[in-house]
Length: 231
Image (cartoon, rainbow, N blue to C red; front, side):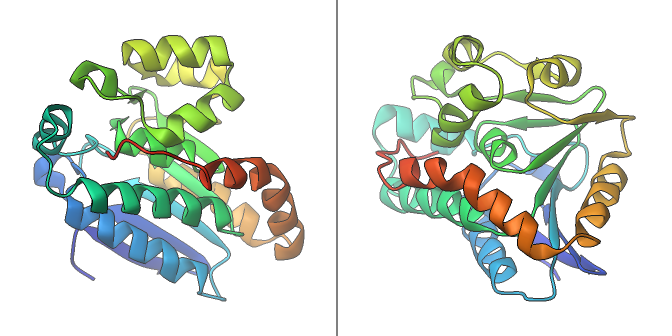
């Protein structure tokens, strides 16, 4: 399969790979559309028991295209309405998934991509990888997914500092404060994520789905009321 998002089934695990390595997987409008479609397809695939989300090449994703961010900050983005709608739909779709989603963060996940990682159930990071939501540096509010979820994962005080400065959170700190589950050797992120996904694959799906619904219910309710600054 070719495109800005690759889909590969390994047994009952589906691997979705952000695929613009020449642009460090910067999230164009096309990529955001394709990822939403791929997530919706996974929702309806009865044979898929777990999902792995990663990026091709040297990084998970550099986040939204810089040109899009500059246009948003200047109020000149003609795709603002569609970007906002895709952002909302992506958040709602990921929260509604009843199969576990494992992020394999190679290199870095910035902005839009940091939000995707926050929406995952388990996060694996390479030892030199980092997370960052630098929207404030463009004069834009922090991403809706990171603002909703990071305060639950670390603490509101820590999340405020990270989001209001846009600084980088490297793997060792992310593990310590609760933004990731496991740190692995650089280059082993996908393999480590697949190992975790296969553990889920062996478990009864009903218990996992019920547990996810319980965790995500308040987030889904919050997502219904999002007034979003598009990525």
